[in-house]
Each structure stands twice: as C-alpha cells, then as structure tokens.
Length: 320
Image (cartoon, rainbow, N blue to C red; front, side, top):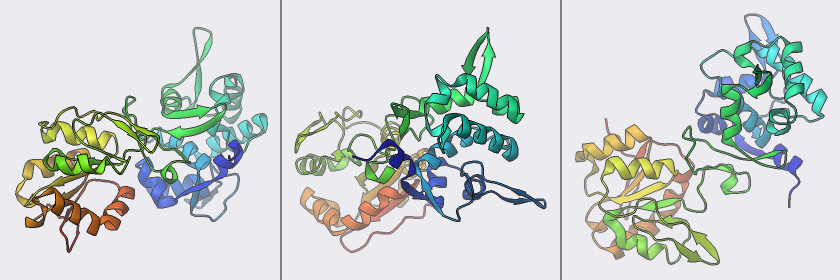
C-alpha cells in the first residue's frame, strides 16, 4: 500500500490530459505549474515550488489546479497566490497545502493570516468572517465538496459540476480516469441481449433494467436507467453523467438527427454497431470482439463523439 505522501506525488496525467479533465486551456494549466513571462515580467509557478520542466502532472498538482480552476471566470493573481501558498507551505510543512484537508477545517486561522499577509484579493480568498466565525468562501466550499479525503489527504475528485454525480477520479482506479464503481460500458436497449450476455463475463458493463449483481466477488450496482423504453433525451444524459461509453446499434446514424443532437448536447461518447452485420446478438458480439481494442481505447477520450463500427472498420462519424 502506498503512503499518503506518495499518492500526492504520483505522476498521473500529461498536461494536455489534465487540462481536458479540468475543462480548461492547457496554456493556463502550464502557466500555473511552470510560471512564465507576461509583458516582460517573470512569474514563478503558483502550484509548483519551482519550475521543473516536466509536462507530467502529479495527483496533488491536479487537485490544486482544480481549486484554481474554480476561479475560471476571473484572472488568477499569480504573485499574491504564490505568496499565499508559500506561507501555507511554511506553516503546514507540506509541499501541496491545498491538497490537504487541514487548511479548510482546523487550519482556517492559518489560512486567514496567510491571506492577509499575501494581500490576496477578497475574490480569491478561501475563508471569510461571517457573524464572528471563519467560513469557507463560495469557490472554496465548491472545491471542498468535489474532493473526497482519507484523513488529511485528497484521494478522489468529482469531475462534474453536479454535486449528485457519482463519477469520481481516484489515483488507484483506472489510472485516475473518471469512473463510477467498476462500470465503464453502457449497452443500449436495442442490443439488450448483448448486454445480458456481457454482464455474465465482465463486471464493467451495464444495460437498462440491469438489477446489478456479483461477479468474481465484486458487486455491480443496478443500472439507474430502470427500463429499456427510455428516450434518447433521458438515457444519454444519464449515461454521460456516469461517464459510461455507450454502445448501441444504428444501421445509419447519419439520418438519426435527434440522437446526434443528444450526443452533441450532452458531450456523450458513443459506439454504434452498424450495417447488416449487427442484426443478431451473435453478429453484434463478433463486431464487438473484432473491434474491442479500438473501442477500449475510446474510454480515455472526452466526448462528444460517435464511432460507427462494423466487422471490418471503426471510424469517427462527422455529423457536419
């Protein structure tokens, strides 16, 4: 078992990948990590103690970038934030103080002092005084609500804005990629037989009406899409909220404008088993197994996208 410190220091993502997961520009993330020059002035990093030249992002760096990203509608004041974080580092004795829980709970007085010493603008403060009590500010509370902690250490991150989303990013599961439990694939109602077949051999698959189950001593939760006859406008948002890759059947996706719109509007990720090959469960299974490596690689891509698949090809569909 890895120590809490080693978890925080573990390299998890490339810069580009971390920026996609945070839904922000890579250039901004790089600036926070490495600093840089703006208008002839050199700025030190906000997140790292010193520039490292590395394009890899550790778990602690990703979590702290998540806090800065919560201020995405305002320009982050590099100098003041850098001073503020340096003061917290010194007071708490840790390299990444905002990846720890202490500043937001028992260390609010230290945070208040550091804010004042750094001259941090009120819009970027983590704590404020209300009725004589130190409370978390709005962005600070949103950040705390996104993070799951064990003891003092951040161990999971909720990537979606919806506080009820069950999707989490955890360093020890799927290399930190978003996941809900072990389920990764949603088999749609029009290939229900394939879904019922796959859950007998894989624990990362679900389908509409799936009651859940146990396979290889690992449990699978019931599918929140309770029954097959659910329209696209309802099932696609649910599957996307759970960060599932949708596998469905569509003989000609190009003419299904409603489904295309639902994928685009919800940033969904979809593979459609296409053509005459996809009529029976056996043929659907043949397509799936033939293209499995390509389908599996799509788990790490962000939506929206649609990939029609046959026995001989799988390629991205351009809805334009």
